[in-house]
Image (cartoon, rainbow, N blue to C red):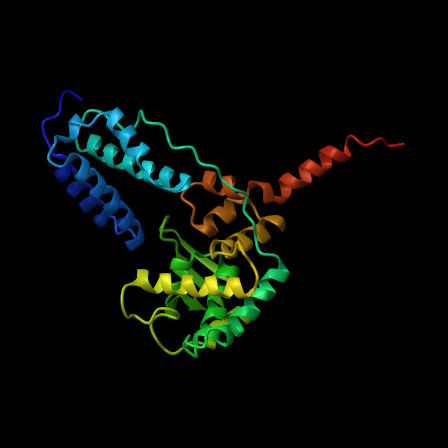
Length: 298
């Protein structure tokens, strides 16, 4: 690059970046994250030239993040995308974030629900109004359907709550994963389809009333699920474990890591490996074969 012909302030660079992200038709959830990052940049650097930001200043940003380790890693990934965008736009010569190391993150092993735990969860969903009588009368059926949908499709709670009626055809769930935009068909067991159909009120969505912001609806269902896990006596229960249960069952039955990665909508198979590699059947079979190979034949 011979030189930077255009001088942009940090504020202007953020506006240009966010405009580009919006043009990419990203999900509302992802745009909220980018806007939050952009607001941080604007607060710190305001009308300073974007090219004046140094790696040390980016490190200072990272140091003051009050985020979980994995969330901090994702924030840094977004920050790198922002500065890479500025490089491509020829607003800066090189990215100050490229020289800043990612925050360390510890990936805890995934913990799927056992069959017994799933029974308790579904039992609690059926009886939730007995413990919480102010909950709407139709909620137990909706909760049970939502739980089964996530358990047997592996979709995130945000995608499940915003699931449209038109996406369920011939006992198959049609997904367009928000992160990858790849279309995926997932067959559902008959009892799951019946549970969803039992709460079909003819609306556009199964679990979203089309009132208020989707984020509020997702939060509401998350809170209800917390009540279910408490009733079921599962201290570490959360919606992502339903996704883990779906994934681990596939891997233990010999489905490839690549296929599971596509079904989950991961943008990289490395993400799938980080969380699910210990559950891959072929890997476990290799371990067992290696150990048995050391046994004496006598």
